[in-house]
Image 1 (tube, rainbow, N blue to C red):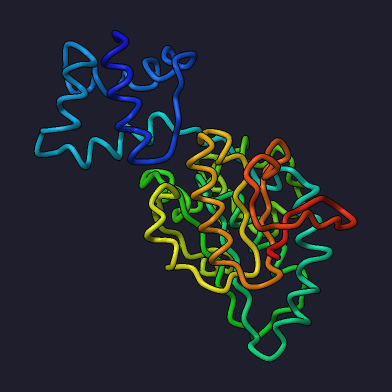
Image 2: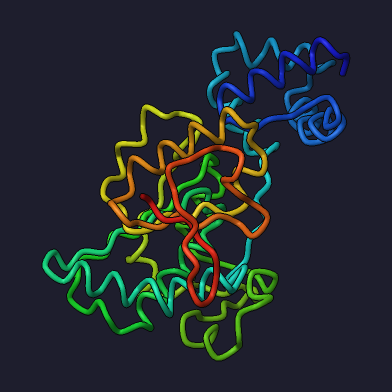
Length: 272
């Protein structure tokens, strides 16, 4: 891939997703897209760029390209401190604050194959605080493929690397092929859909959220895309709502209208 083609492909991917590749990651982009070039029997990345621009199937292929370049690493009960803060502190707060509406609204943004969203469903169910409530647990990802896998709710052993066997046996049924199928109680709690965090025009589909989990997603955004995304999160959270980022992420350089909330289990961001 020559430099000019890299820049054009990079810009196309950025505009479509907010994912940012700088010149140091050119080889990474090339490695991730090469299977798509080969699958279409094209001779060069230049031809692939033209395909994404002008072919009648360009929209479908762009989705495949974005799926190829995105990182989908996840598993159940990942980064436990934030989950303890949610399960042991936030849920009791929400139960008191939302007593009149009896509605709980949570969004797992960048949910990949669904492990985080189903983890949140488990914590809500196990809290015992929301029987008879309206639970709006939404989960989204850029990739149609991983959303389809999340809806299917079938997982291999690697997804359970930090989940105890007792919980796995309670909420999953092992299948003849060795995979584990999620219990219907959890499946119906989560509404999965495709959502592009780079498209700020669509943020209004989520409103008055109590908490947003967006962990280890904005690591792959540049500053401008992070700022747009965080602004959208702020608009959709209710006053006092929480934004949960990954352990390696911070809002320090964005001057965002959130305060750092010091909970017993973790440091999280709260809408001012």
